[in-house]
Image 1 (cartoon, rainbow, N blue to C red):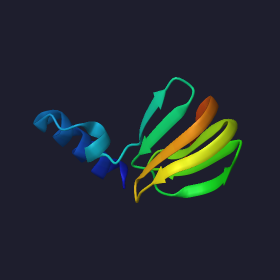
Image 2 (spheres, rainbow, N blue to C red):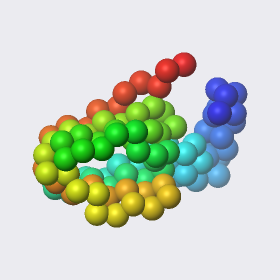
Image 3 (tube, rainbow, N blue to C red):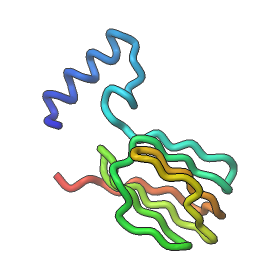
Image 4 (cartoon, rainbow, N blue to C red):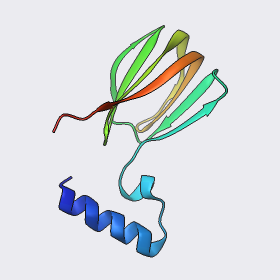
Length: 95
């Protein structure tokens, strides 16, 4: 998506009171303590093991580190990760 398209969608989302994560395909991350992380609007898994998960998103990669990771649910654009979550980091998208 070009910057111009993103600006138009952002303006439209503000005007129509639509959630920006839906209009701009932004990731939505919900955590419950440090035990569960629910990621919506991801663009696929880059890497996964019991201590790290990296997924693609519209704004770049999202890296989650911790231990005892298990993917409990995975749908087309949604993912539920369980385990001990230590850190969630947004890695910049290469321009």
